Image 1: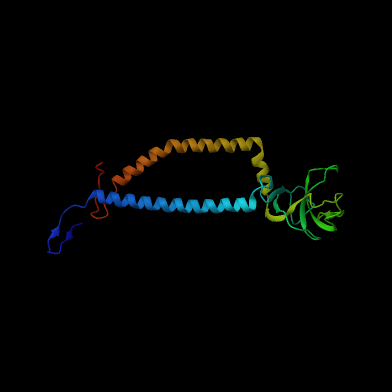
Image 2: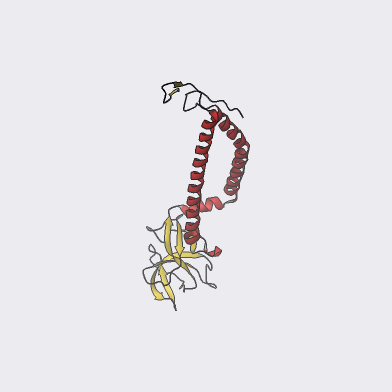
Length: 214
C-alpha cells in the first residue's frame, strides 16, 4: 500500500520485509511467553492440589484410596467405585470409615468401608454395612482407621485396577514412548515449515509476500 506524505507526494517506497518479520517474531515470542505462564500456573495449581489433597499416605500425604468391593454399602457405594478417604481428628456414630481389619483376626490387613453404629475409640467401634443385616465381626480402634470419605469417583476403582494390570500398563507405557519418539522426529520438520510459512507470509502493509532474505 502506498502512503501519501505531508507534502502531498505519494510514498512509493516498498515496506521493509525485515520490519514485518521482526513484528511477527515479537508476536510469536509474546504468545509463547503467555502460553508458558499459563502452563506454569495450571501445572503449579495441579501439583499443589495433588500434594495437599491426593498425595497417598504412604508418601506422607493425607489420602488413602479404597476400591469398593461387594454390595454391603449399597446404595451409597457400588462395586468398582473409588473412595478417597482422609484421616479425621475424631469419629462418632453415624460416620462412614475405612479401616484395616486388625492383626490376628480373619481377613487381617484387608480394608473395609462401613458405617460406625456404636462403640468408642478406646474399646473399638462397632461397624456395619448400610446394606448388611448383621454387625461386623471386627471392632477397629483409631489405629486401624484410615479415614472418612473425602471424594467418591464412581467406577474409578475399575479404571485404577485396569491400569495396574500388567498388559494395559505395558501398553500405555509403550504408547507414550512411541508418541514421544514420533514427536521428536516430527518436531524439527514442523518448525522448519513454520519458519518457511512465516518467511513467505503476506506483508500486512502492502498485501504482497515478503521473501526471507536471510
